[in-house]
Length: 308
Image (cartoon, rainbow, N blue to C red; front, side, top):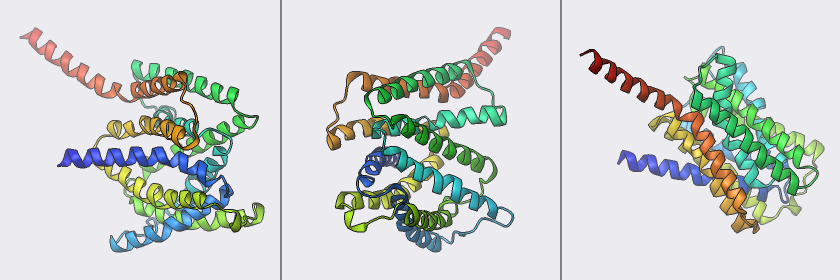
C-alpha cells in the first residue's frame, strides 16, 4: 500500500509539473505576466488559508524569523514566478521545463559553493555533461527562435537560480517551518503586490482574456500551486531526496510530448535525444552518493574477509 501511494504521488507530481509549463504558455497568450501571476497567487491563497485553519497550522513564522517570510514573498514568489511567465513568452515551453529540470543540479552546486559539500567523480562528470548538453539545447532554441530568445532564457535561468538559493537556505535553516506556513501568507502578499504592479505598468483589459488563458490560470492556482506542491512535499517525506528528484527529469518529457499535441510542434529526434542525455547527466549528479556507500560496504566486506 505504501509503495502504491508513493508511485501515485510520483505520477501526480510528474504529470502536474509537465502540464504546468504548457499552462503558463497558454495563460500568457492573452493575460499579461504580472497580472497572471498575481491572479495565480490570489486564487491559491484562500484555499491555503482554509487548509491551514483546519490543520491548525500557523500563518506567521516563529518570532525572530518573520523577516525571512518577507524575503520569501519577494525573492521566492513575486520575482521568480513573474519572471517564469515573462520569460516563457519568448521561449518554447519545453525549453522552459528543461531549464527548471536542472534545479537539483544547481542546488547541489550551491551546496558545494556555500557549504563546501564534497562531490565525487561521477557527480563532477554529471555537472560537466549537464552544462554541455543544456548549452546545446539552448543554442538550438536561440538558433530557431526569435531575437528575444536569449532574453527569455536569461530570465528563466535567473528565476530558477533564485528559487534554488531560497529553497536551499530555507531547508538548511528553517526545517521547522510547515510547507503551508511557507506558502500561505507569501502567496497573499505576492498576489497583492503583483496586482498593484500590473495595474501600474500592464493596464490589463479583462475583456481581452480568452477562456483558455483563464482556465490555465485556474490550473496553475489550484492544481499546480496547491495540489502539485503538497503532493511533492509528501513525496519528499516518503522517499529520499534522490528518488524525489527523479520528478525533475520526467516532467520535461511530458512537456515535450504535450507541446506536440497542444501546439503541433514536431518532435525532432535531436530534441528527444538531447532531453534524454540531459536527464542522464542529471541522474549522474544525484546517484553517486548511494554508489559510494555501496562501494564502501563492498570494500569493508572484502577487508574483513581478507583479514580473516
